Amino acid sequence: MNAVRGMMVSLAVAGLLCSVLPAGAEEDAATFYKKNKLTMVIGTSPGGASDVGARLFAKYWPEVTGGEMLIKNMPGAAGIVALNYMNACKPDGLTMNIMMFNGAYQMPYFQKNKAAKYDAREFKYIVGGFCEPWLLTAASKFKSLEEFKNTKGLRYGVNAPFCENTFAALPMIRGLGLDIKMVTGYKAQVEIDLAVGKGEIDFTLTPLSQGLRTVEQGMVAPPMLVIAAERTPVLPDVPCLAEVVDMSPEDKRIFEEAMNLSAIIRMAAMRGDVPEDRVEFVRNAIAKMVELPAFQEDALKILKLGATPVLGKELDDFLAGAFTLDYSNLIRYLEPYTK
Image 1 (cartoon, rainbow, N blue to C red):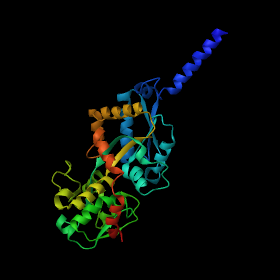
Image 2 (cartoon, one colour; image 1 turned 180 degrees about the vertical axis):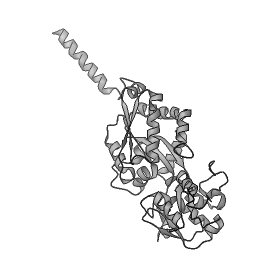
Image 3 (cartoon, helix red, strand yellow; image 1 turned 120 degrees about the vertical axis):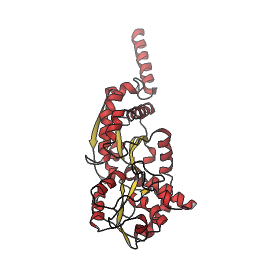
Image 4 (spheres, helix red, strand yellow; image 1 turned 30 degrees about the horizontal axis):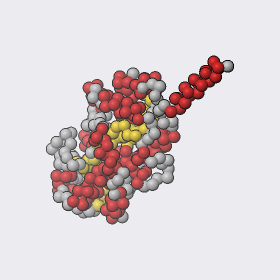
């Protein structure tokens, strides 16, 4: 009887210890990810930069971890469908999302989108990447930036009045004193670029790599302006907005917040309650991955600037301003141009 009682006490103590140990304490994160498959959920169909970038992470994941990464495409609602799915999965660190930050994470928060069943401020962010500046894409009839900015009634093509494109354009429109008429309703950026090429509209803003393709195809004017605080190495002779516009303190604040809200950055994240050791392992694995020469070479085949990883303090600094910027103030400044 004493032996049986002793065994029961031992089992009870063991059970108690298991209940108080943190998740994953039985094995370290490296072993966990070597044994289990990590699924990367993407909020687009196959073929876009987010999808191709995710597949690049999956390709090199075994090299840095010894494990396997799977890809799951779940297009819909600018990435909200995929993030809802990730947020409903177990918080075990085996499901991660990658998508454009503004459309899937940031805008649903500011616009209080009820379709988004998550608070993007609570996620554990892993890495930002495949970043690019916006490029002014103007009709071929414009021979210089001076001619462009002095033209009255410029037709500006966008998807919607309040989207990443229009927020990116706001400092340029204000700074150059452009006289514009916004033309909305386009379904995709490629459709807008084609409209510029046909002369149906006068300009739009386009992500750098895509914009340069339209230039190379002879559809639009050569690059005149990069919407950024500094020049891009891909176009060293093309000025950036900060060079050609004198900004007051308020203009600078609008510029900085508009650049954050319109940033072209694909963001990878996990649920906020994933164990910290697993989050750190994945972050460190990605940091090692982006240093691999083969990874960097492959990334340059996707975008002109390559992977442009945003990690550590740089990522923290970006996120610190991402959900605290004055969205209503940007709307107030942008609204007159939407009418």
